[in-house]
Image 1 (cartoon, rainbow, N blue to C red):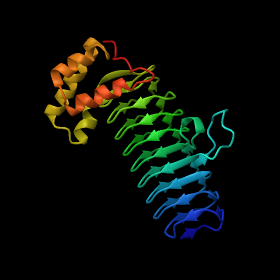
Image 2 (cartoon, helix red, strand yellow):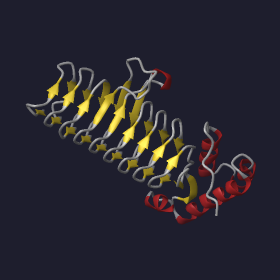
Image 3 (tube, rainbow, N blue to C red):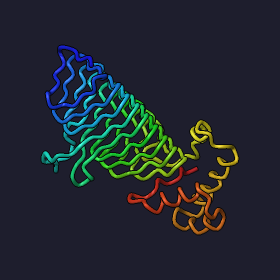
Length: 259
């Protein structure tokens, strides 16, 4: 273990011997940091925070501080971070709240760029990329392989489906289903995330099939299109994923763009 002499590490913290802690870092008493992590300098990790193996956390990131929620009264909530993530400068990740399940989670292999904010009770799954200043309000759920452009923001309780792309500067106030692009203020759906699908190994015929699925839904509406979708695509796994996402919406689904 390498701990810079200017760092302040509470005696109660559990730090693996392979971890490097840079200058002026502050590590609280309930923090756990697993093997092969590096905190580059001026990083603050507080609260009940568990950081898995192989994470890189850059200067002035603040992880595990209390949520920006006026109802929070110091309850013992947590942050959980998986493996292989890159968390860049000035990122903030707040701990959970009792009303939201008590835990803010970032899974594995995410790339969180400078000045991003992940609020209380968010769930960010594997391989998510958040460009500079992207912001998640409380209770947001982000599925695997979602990309956020810079300065995008997501409303409380919204969900972002797998392999979606959120355009730069988008203001997302409703759920964004899998495989699509959302952009604009207020965000609307702007077609398939074809580049993302191709990069993740989707064959051309599968991409065209997903395009046809969405054409049915956009033509007939999210609810009215579901029976037609089942008629045309039956138990197709992509159709089932999209339908399940729509069924579980709380805020409603982002509308398609107006051409």
